[in-house]
Length: 578
Image 1: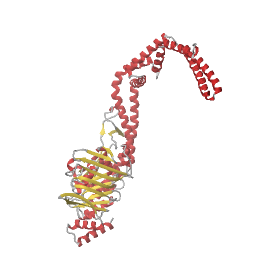
Image 2: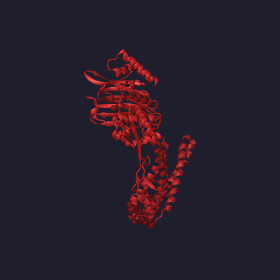
Image 3: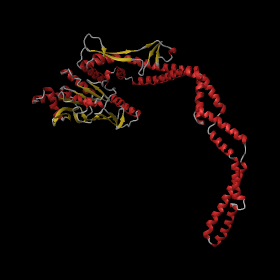
Image 4: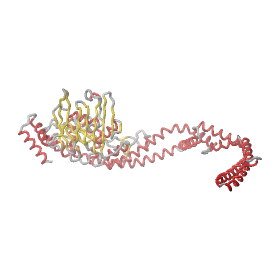
């Protein structure tokens, strides 16, 4: 539900803040005071179009912010998680439109695109009146209303999962067929490349090991002479370091008997003698292993040359050569076994098509069972709402296809029912559209073409009334859907809204006292002048103020005691009929 809204510098609004209640929130006010401007401003945070012309004169930008309670809204939670947005019990949507044309959208203070904001708005609010944000004006949404009415969400999910798998298999099949010619053309190349790489058989980390061995063989003479000289210096020469350290150690041993402070120096000297002896031993062994092998040297040079040529052709490193070899081998295997791969995919598609077809058939059958029920229910509700002689019809169509196994991906996904093939989509094989006639003797026509704004809103009110418990949108906004009705019909419209408010939060702009008297919270929009400038303000009314406002709606600006008494009676009667 919408907990609060803040609107700054929008049209004739300077600064409006409102806290809404659960249930039925009513907004009234004089014509021209700015009631619909409030709805337009709310549309900004639902992803509607924005224009810099809507910014209040003299302001740099307009800011609209709404706080929604979404703790129990699973669809919003899932959407936020998919988009990588913070999930909490409250959702804050903010839209900023600058005079320079810049448009910024935020969800919980995180910048998002306008498309993300609109997607969230579609999961939060259904807005009805003379506005674009009406789901009934989108024929693609009609199938969702039918499924909601029939409680078919489980069947839809089962079908959709199979449809996704089938679509993925088709994608793989199309990709394979697109590659067919190229694979066949390059088969010989793949075979040559495999032979070329396998002839060398490069090994991981081989190059580093060979380069180390090459350096040693190239410098064998230098290493031999140097290690011989070092061994002489440390151990075998006339003034060998090892001998000098032994003499030093013995002398320090004699001195330490005189002064124990020299014992540590004696020990260090002894350790040094041991270390020098070990180094000399290592150098002697190393010197003995030095190999003068021109044949091995040439062999390594040739091997490194082979690896260098492969690196130039296949990516610059042994790792990249091996990765390329694996990829080429897979491509070659595919080219060699192309028909087998195609056959395997064809089998998988037919198996999944069978499962998808069964799910589609069950779903289509259940939808047809629901049609007459929803037709009768909507007509009955429309009669209550002042549309007599209405005919409401749900038309379900399927597209039959002249296809079979040889379709070759021209149709991306289709299902088979009996011996016939049908085009399939994410929600099944059915195309659903609502048709309506509001005049006696007229055939029903597409709802989006024949219904006026007021009729669309009352059709929506009828649908919402019969779908109240299952409908997915927590907030319904009605912008003067009561235009052209009065008396008994107005009472019916009001009772319908009140009934809806048990399951949804409802915000309704109205000019009828029969509806205003049912409010759980009542706001009035007023236009005030401050320093010779007009501004729209929104006030939440206390009980006595509500009585006075309802009395104004009943009798005009001049409120009499009789008018107040009539307003109280109307509100009491409305309360007793909840």
